[in-house]
Length: 266
Image (cartoon, rainbow, N blue to C red):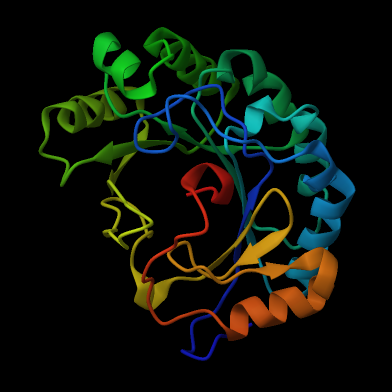
C-alpha cells in the first residue's frame, strides 16, 4: 500500500510489551513507569491476526520490539506463530540483549534469524550508568550465544549524542567489526521536542523514505513515531486502522507528546 506521498508502506513494528528490565536514561524514568494493565495488552492471537491482515495488504517486513520483548511471557511461542505467516520476507527482533543468552537458541529454533541488540558502550561502568541497573557482561554473553546459534545478521544499535566518532561509538564499531556484527548509530532523540536524526548504517530517521507503521502493545497503530496520531485496531477493526494509519501518515515527523519510546518501540 502507498501513502499520500507515494511511499510504499510495507514494514510493521510490533511492540509486544511496555515493560523493560532496564531503565536507560534516554528511554525511561529512573522510578519506572505506570505499566499498561495486562487486560489492555494485545494477545498473541490478536497480534497474529493484525499481522496477517497487514501482510495481505502488502507488508513484508515485521519486527518485534518492546519495551523489552524478551520479558513478555511466551515470547518464543509468539515468534513461532509469526514465522508461520506466509508473505513475511524479513522478520526480526530488537532487544537489549540482557536475556539473550537464555533465549537465543529457543528463538532461533522458533524461526527468528535476524536480531538487533542495543549496545551503547563497552565500558561496564558506563553501561551501568546508562541503563541504571544493567550488567554489560549479560549482553556480551548474549551476543556470543546468538552468534554461536547462527543469527545473521546481528546488528548493534548504539545511541550517540551526535555521531559515531564519539569514544563509546568507536569502541562499539571496533567490537562489531571483530565479531562480524553490523553497527548502527542512532542519534539521541526527543519525542516532545521532535528531535531526531538519520541512523548511520541504517534506514531510520529519513522521513522521505519511511515505510513503517508501529503497533503499540495495547493495539494502537501509529503512522509515525514523532506524531500523536494513532488508530485503535480494536475499535476500528484491523483493515480500517491500517487504512487510516497509512492515509494519515505525515510527510515528516514533528513531535509526540502522548507517547514514549518504551511503549511505541522506538
